[in-house]
Length: 423
Length: 97
Image 1 (tube, rainbow over the protein chains, first blue to last red):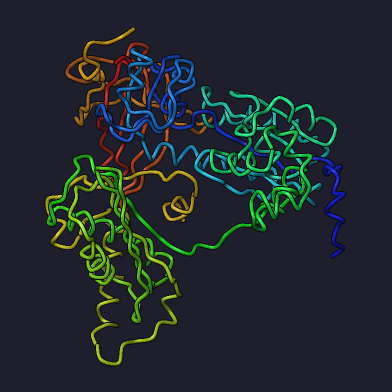
Image 2: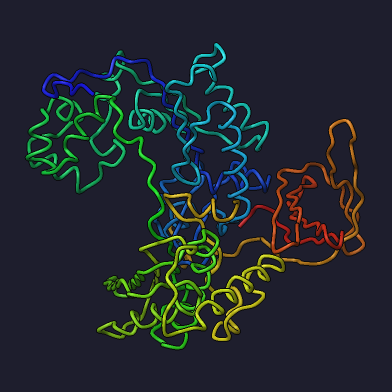
């Protein structure tokens, strides 16, 4: 492949063929779709509906009062006293995501969910699927199908660009219900209206990096040469990627393979009680183990991390010589790591993940433990029972009396967990 | 507006019910859709004006149809268990806090 002269790399002059679709205030809008009497009202979707619960999604109306994601419920209520607080209905949100993705897949086989409420459709070399329609026409069609097939209250913002970055800039440019096309003809005009932190992935740390080399505006960012970005601002290959990305050249079209499987839990009541923490850890390991075995994987590494009430944190990971497959195997390793905590402080959040994944079909059996094979077969059989009769029908005894502790959640960012639910 | 005690105001008018209800259904063969039409709950007849969302939830081999509906005054969440064909009223809300 011919390497372009980077010092003279122009703004990408190609037609924009990447579409980024963002469901507006997804969690809250979905709740308003299902509950008609919430429509037009400020709604706060919070992890817990208690005063210190974290707002994970304010509705469009609540945003108008200044409520932001990450506010406490009590803060949201101070800003919008009439706001209605709800906890996320995970089944409902996942169903909307699946329906939304199916609509998008009617237009191109290259549909890449970026999160529960964001999808990228790549039309590169997919002219056949356009069926003589322009991308803005397809975008309008997706918007109307979303209303017709998912719900009349649903809306989305769509950006179209020459790469994923510009498409995302376009989708964020006009909210709610926007449609913005960014190409070489209007890129400068759009950039002139944006602050550095309006750009995706540029938040405080990256802004500081850019400011340290005299880049204060998006225009400055575009004018900066590749050496300034690579050697001075980012001091890594990241600077080169930014140089291309901001000019509309694709550097983000990479789909990462799953490298780890994890679960975490933000405790409603912070605690340092070892018994309670062991129960929670076991439930997290059970959920993680179910997903691990569903993917027919086993794991060599375990990682445990703790966020404490005083906002300090601790973590420890270890790769073991033997693999983990059953819930008990995972739990024993995770408990061993958790016991290494230097200080016994009240926990606010407990996370566990497994890594070093390998296909379970190629696992090496232990020479000294001839019951290993039987134990793993038993784990598969227990999973089958839970598949047939529902989650946690059969659980390890340590989990008795836990009821709905570690409730179902939707992760921010990746949507790999949705694949676990629906495939 | 400043609130003297914002903790007091966090009371959703959202009632968890979880009671069996009687249901009259309408099936449209042309459209291929089934819609709950009239519900009887606590000896009151509640006409269902609109299904605002419908989805499926699977738990083991149990498949449940979840209907979010409204009678114009309140929102209701109904579950139809496909194994037993029983209807349950799960949640009632007036959409106010």
